Image 1: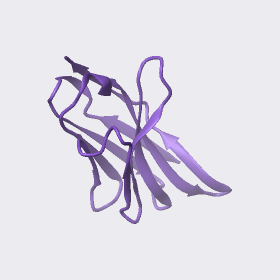
Image 2: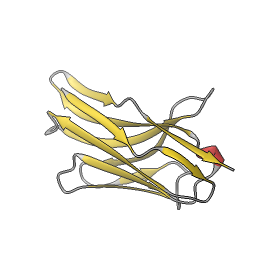
Image 3: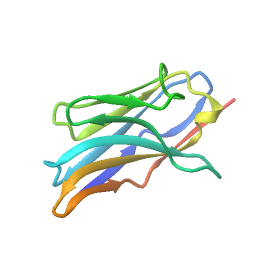
Image 4: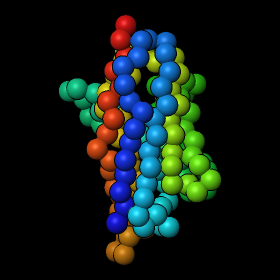
Length: 119
């Protein structure tokens, strides 16, 4: 079992920055990747950025050049540095942990942290 907790959301003006944190705890030895997703009102949840256990990263086109995903040495805390925020970045941001389970791949979600960007 893995627990996932996000933090760092808040209200920021357009052009500002926020850093989100995701802490995974519990049985994290089999984690393969951790990603940030977001869901704006009335829209589907979408991938923002993801980092694999090997350190490979990928970003949504909307995040490239503005957001950076990183992690600590223990690979259980993942950060999302968001710069030059835009009103369209307003959403609940969720952390997702992918891992090998007993019967195959499983994933765990946090409860999310709200990011609001004012114009």
